[in-house]
Image (cartoon, rainbow, N blue to C red; front, side):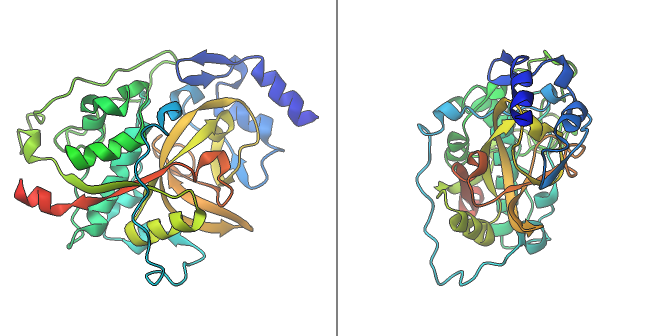
Length: 334
């Protein structure tokens, strides 16, 4: 009864703006949410994250995901993986690929669909390259040039983002204001709750201080893009063999107050649909989890990472998983 009353109280204060749902003034900080749900979280700990919750944005247009779903992935040969470990962390498996442990910041833009995708592409380029070479794919091209992907900062779709990598390739890009790569990330964090950013115009030129002028000479390509079956074991096999994957799930406001433990939704209205990088799995205090990297900066959650219940398709986390493999030959021929 207490839980139901809490939910009704919040629902009375819902405000909807675009594809993002927010709640009333009393619950605009994660600290206030954490105080409200302290007795409801069993497997995880809520706390105060530094930014107002409206600054933590999603951006996947879930209503179009089925329409743009990629073909199912390459079947895993049973003999390749005889027994998967109880826990796995891609950072430990491929320590030479430092990008796996990096947390990106999508800023004041509903670009998680692009940011998470390029983070996974970066990891896989390193994992599958002969010498573990690092190339940092930036989200700029997807946000600004991929027309079939969606509407830039107003949300997009993960399937077309991976297909675009295969067909057109993507240029490099470091964090906001870093001047790293061909196209550094173009958008800073929010500075007001009403701020709405627009992706910059598509550009075929790298910024002036980069050592390559034309994006055609900087782009790297994917060889194949695919969906991973909505099955716990198949997702584990994919990560174990090929590296991190991109996953989509429904975000509710309590997630924005996550600090540690294995997240399970307990309270509040839906905020958005969100894409993240999934890089491993394990068991904590008897609860199975997926290990994921968010794109809300290192100050959010557990230094930017979080764990979420595994094996139940909780909030759809296992039903919309995408990945791909890099095409080194096409780059060499370009």
